Image (cartoon, rainbow, N blue to C red):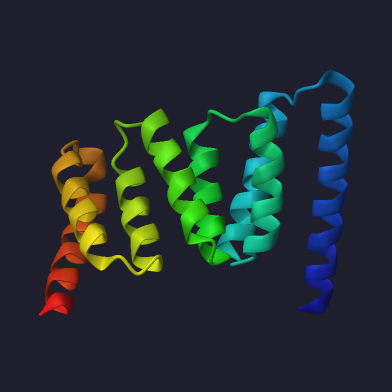
Length: 156
């Protein structure tokens, strides 16, 4: 397992060096490089390596500050680091940039739970239920309904 982590760190380091060099050369990064960086950050999130994800997403957002996916992922990393106020701010930006996507409401509810504001979280999950009307969001709506029920039960 230690060898895998060392290999992962080397691959990550090489990818970052390449992206940094490209960014310095052109004051921007390509969409392909942005997607590569996002994929690395997402992998770090899945591994609960929030510090690495935060670093990668902070760098990415220097060049792609208005991309809601990057904002939402960064909010997740910030929440994982216990920086709930920053996570709430970043998630709010994602919601404003991509208001038609109820997944940002769900994430905001999770952020509010982490900030220990269960009443506000319940209200936001309820908004998510109401906003998730498109069939592609059926699973998200079910999860939001479960969170509303759980939070109502917790209040009693």
